[in-house]
Length: 313
Ligand SMILES: O=C(O)CCC(=O)C(=O)O
Image 1 (cartoon, protein in one colour):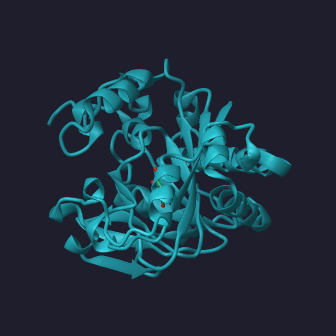
Image 2: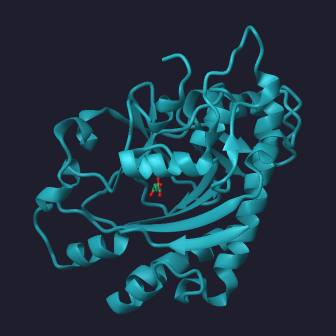
């Protein structure tokens, strides 16, 4: 397993915000159709993104929670999990590590350390312990997702192969005009599965039925976001979630995303047991490295990057 830790481009934005701007610089202003106010934004935990309690969870039993898992994966591409086995203390420590990095390190230290896993951010072994727990949970979720489709529990993990893990800590300073901009543009993640924690401020939104729904921050929960390779492996029965982050004018926000990806040489295709005459493959096989390169060089193709792989458009 490979782990890397980065602070994204949050450092530059933080420096700008701390200079006391009254207006958002023009390069950060979104076209009207992408601005937060152009969609109705539901903020709910009951009728919103499913919340699944993993305590004693058995995906082969078709109880209410299994239905929630399938609903989360097929209708949303995302859900929250509780009783996931990662100690709450560790979730809090990881958020604290991120805040210490963004609030207490000098700009020079941030630039030096922002892409270095052996940095100040890993002090005390918190990052290592967190990454181990999160990886265990990601593998457990891959097996639950496989079983929920009637596949062998190792099916998705077998297709993914060796898992590469990348942790990104994102810091969103208060923004003078949050209605004009986004903390992070709408996207789906390109790998297999992302596990995200956020502080109590809130700002993560998931697109559902053309509506942006705010994911309610729950202090003990982890947000599970299915990424493009899972949509391919499940032959579109489960979808990758389009998501984005909005900002606000009064409080900074921090999130920690942990991405789990195949190796660059791995070939990803729909799981063989899901393909039949009645249910033909919807996606072409792709080498993961080619998918990543095309994402970075060509940018989004069509509605979503993954649409370029559809066999019958
Ligand atoms: O900050 C968030 O809530 C979203 C982060 C995210 O989507 C990402 O890092 O890809």
